[in-house]
Length: 276
Image: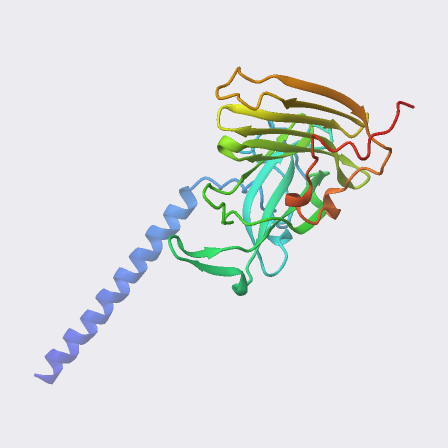
């Protein structure tokens, strides 16, 4: 009886071994038949001797095909990557990259009565230029934007949108019935400098004022609605003014402390200078 049991155990072991070998052979054949996978645009191919760069159309969804460090490697410790945008910032025909990052401080979480736990950590921006197929950071500002979960009072808080267009970087704030405003930066002196500002202040369908600032020509144009009884679009009556601003160094993106404070009042003429 013991001999029979022993034979059965040996047969079972041989069967298990045969199944394991068969599985290994199937996996090996499957792997050999697979086509090699293309490297992800944002990840380097280790050991590659040739650096390749592919020109692609601008836009947030068109990632530059480069070989270098993964984008997450550029994010500072204690921060998360929340957005990435691709486009040509310096006119060399290849896509650069803009990262929106967000701090992960535990003390910035708040408990809201209606919305529950909210992350009020501030956000920042990083600009990576594509140099010979590899990203190189030129701007790192870790806290220039408020969080996306700010208290908007009786209305929602302004919504930040990022776009790369015509070799320039735009930060656009949309605030529904209250209007919108936009900052325009260009690549210069190993940084991004503010060259334009546009804003529209509104009360529902009625425009209250518009402001346009060109920091290269130092010209500010404003239009203020003086019809206090305006109730619908088209009821506005504007007083317009064009003034020249004093000569100042251009504002650098790396030095902006808080975009909430980067505001240009359409009625403020304290810095107006005479034509030179």
